[in-house]
Length: 334
View (cartoon, rainbow, N blue to C red):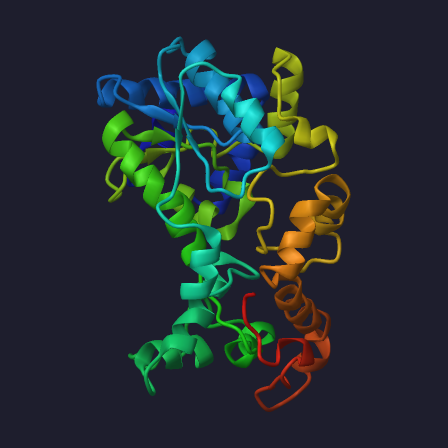
């Protein structure tokens, strides 16, 4: 069954994925190592590990260097400029780690393109409508779900709850990750080779769909990458770290459940998300910068209000609109 996961054009069903999720940790280690060895062999050892310092990439780095016996594979740390200092120190404690940086910073992104909110997909769709010149096929698709063929595409439409973001008073865009992470990593790939990436299918619908389509080793993508722990769960990750006594970023002992960008807005609207409450306690100067210089909390307030009103909005028969937020009148980055 090992070969089935690594097929570059694999089509995995929901049942296939459930079976893989249910495998024992030992089975998952064996399967992941098979994918790692295959990837390493395909590119003659000229490969790298994308190492963010998060739990997933920490496990991945250990699998590559220790379980699979490739200690010389370089790790690439993409320093977006939004990294927690504790995480940066943790990453730099490992040997053979190469740090890369984007050509532009977060401030440039939000001033030039807009804020990333809700999710990458919603940010992309809302931004496309905001930038549309007149009535275009893309704008119609995003607002109504109707394709140029006259069919309905649920996945191509902005969910009703987020349609008011189109006229919310600030620009929305999904360009943040492209500029701060993907572009530097694309440059790094030319130097260090196609990467191992520690993404997992259960983290998002997009990652699940990608895994179902490509399997772990996506040889034929425009930017080839291997995701050898795609079928692992969060519980597997924690069990592996405990079993192997791996060091991990101190952020997780400070109350954080993620080690990504300090002031990422994606998913921050959920009521159980406390990332900014924690940030105010652990990094008050960064929190103040987000509030006073970047305008993040004015933006988040609009998103949270829409999310809180979603049930009332569903009951309406006409397309809802949102009155301008007083906090955003004359909105600009100081």
